[in-house]
Image (cartoon, rainbow, N blue to C red; front, side, top):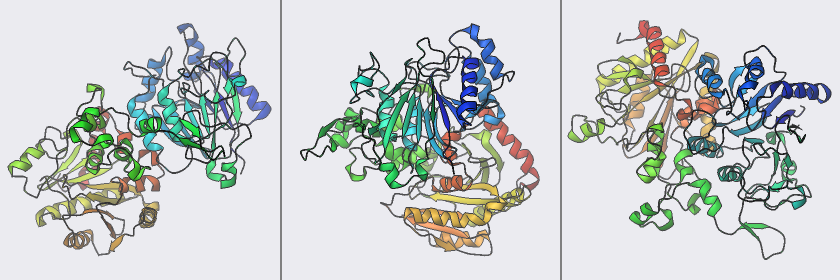
Length: 603
């Protein structure tokens, strides 16, 4: 299979006629090319360019090949991209681009996606101290990229609008453009990201010049990185603004191919390094100051003093965001499982780490601890206090009642916040109970009726349902997740969960029964309240369960992550990537209620 053929472009500056004329010419003479990736400012500098620019946006002029851009700033950006973001086809989080018009896609925020077999990561916008709707990346965008870098596989192409600080360090001075050797030029956040992501190609714009740096070795990886900066379209100095690549995806390369280092390879420009005494030219880090910022970005010196933890007082962002940290016991920061669970429930990392969040109302996460449940009686004073902050207690001011779709005597249904798929439902006990496996008999029957109704509802649509629950010994408010999947994939569910378990190093226990109610009773009889448990009920009634040991590294969103892989929507594995506005959520819930009415046992 031939390697994909990709065109790269610097700042378009709204000069789309000139850009696509050149693309068409190159495509005809040296193509065909599969896609065009644009970095730097994509929109015009002045309003007098808008008419020609809008000819493409509104479809009067044609874009020759699929084109992706991250430079969402310039004149006209708010009008164009506000409409794009509101388009119903673009709702949710789409890592592979929001469609602007035919063959044009906006890569919003940050993300990673597959493009003709190539793994492409990107950071849209540029650094800005002010809050604005478009054109500036946020801390959340950076955090998401850091979490994505934990995933297996090598990133082939990394796109940024600005240069990374220090990229010319250790480069041959003869090749560095005049004035660009100043180590302070560029964006230090991008330096941290690229040192951590270690892409094979890093493409940037924004500086107005073309620069193809010698490849450099990465710390902790066998492959090299090539940095390519591109000039603006139509620049007066006639510097290169179009560049062609045809890289074999890293996933298709042999180990020997990935390890190959050209003769002009330099050391990494982003590490503090010194030659080892052995004289073999190997590089080692002298100090972890740069690397540490990749794992934890906050100064919590006061918190360290308070806890007496020395250098270990801060939370490890890697662990909190992804459930694991490649440094393991060598990490200088705390791997706090409770903080991880609070983060999963939507609590702001700044708040967890520093006790406050400087983003204020602009932050989309919770600024209060979601209290743990203790025992079964929500009538107690302690439980009453917990319910004030619990997302799922109906008496709580935090409950998002617009997502509720059905209320019974003992259980209610609500659509999931940040749904994995349409009609992703939660079945929730009205009482503040720690799990659904130890419900009183009358409550269990209510839950079973809702399960059966959902199965009938989805079967009418040619779908089956997967039910799963994370049971925490810390006793959060129970919720059983119900995710519909196409019937054609139902037979693969048990197999894919077993494969995922094998990858994590455990084997599921299996409970088979004639119906879900009996299977849940069997599982509940063996439930130890001092243990964590994950279980999933696959189509057909089989229940797979796994008791999670205290020190076991188990992803709390395991069920969602496995189904995201099964459905080929890996970018939606984290619910925070799928959040909608309250108006969108309300419409989603109203639409579900109208379709579900004839099946709803509580209607």
